[in-house]
Length: 84
Image (cartoon, rainbow, N blue to C red):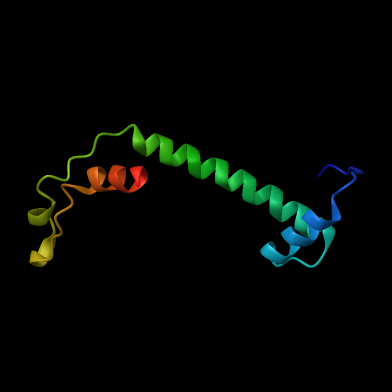
């Protein structure tokens, strides 16, 4: 673990503490850094899935017990939602 001395904006620290539910400066800073790292990992995972072509064309028939859902327009609907 690295020990550093840094000037921190008190308003931002208080806002972060409130959002993150932390009670100390150290916990707040560590939680904020962790949240940023997790967000980057999530973006990388989404980008990896975005590169994979998925065919949901027969999804309604693919599920067991007749409980399938038609996912054939899933990607198109997601793009439409992004455009809105």
